[in-house]
Image (cartoon, rainbow, N blue to C red; front, side, top):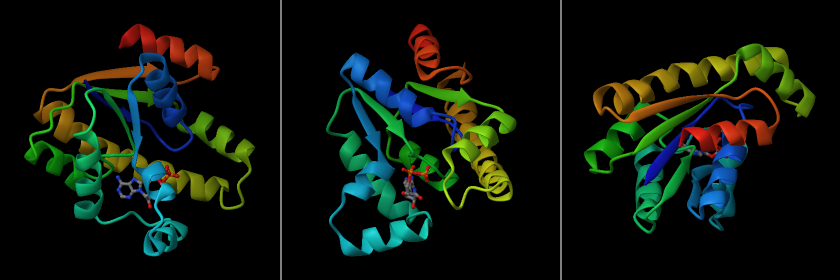
Length: 170
Ligand code: ADP
């Protein structure tokens, strides 16, 4: 079983993916976490810039890792249209795409509460815009073209409330 969790920054998708993985005994596979755990200096340097990593590089890394497990929850990969195309080309079939849906207003509220220095309303708005554009491309590639089952979960409420909705729908 391979399930992709999609969600805007601040949607709680990583929390939800990890909670579900722990509950089911499945592997939670976050490319962001893999990169942060890397001991390669150039990876650590690039992480500081906040830029996305190269599609070929990240796809190879992720595919190698996916192949090791029977049940995987993907978090943060695929993150671009090209990455989505590449996993289709590699013959990896997703079983479900789960989107944690939170409206822009709520996301902005949550991110402002989180209080990171770079998080002001304008920057947050930009990040949501970028997310929505790539999200549409990924959904088009994986859900519309590949007919992967798509589940939308209301991401409002406490993490526990959202997790119950996730479990009821998986
Ligand atoms: P965030 O949601 O804040 O970007 P992540 O943990 O998902 O946090 O990712 C951290 C960083 O790792 C990203 O800013 C990006 O540089 C890199 N990264 C993670 N996943 C990918 C991916 N699929 N493609 C390219 N870069 C990625």
